[in-house]
Image (tube, rainbow, N blue to C red):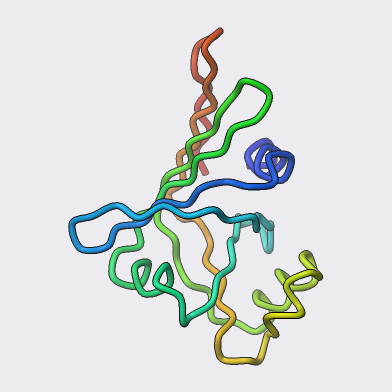
Length: 130
């Protein structure tokens, strides 16, 4: 999992795909944080992405850097504990201008049954599961 987190942080921006009814939805994201041994992302409950994940938790991330890309798929599970929200905000101080752990909007999800595939045009894919 550490390799996945390092790749996402170094890429800085990744694209999160969710399902909206029968249509895919993709948007840029930037949070990737390990808390209690799990990989977390953050969003706001008022956003469509939150509503989509609550209806269908299957999601995929794609990031690209230095001629390599990562596709990370799995279920995103909400962690409604204040400690998880605060840990994310501590890791990303720039979010604190828009979110707080107690605002009723901040939401964090962790990956469950995750499968990461590192690929490039030059070599065989590498698979990491967690």
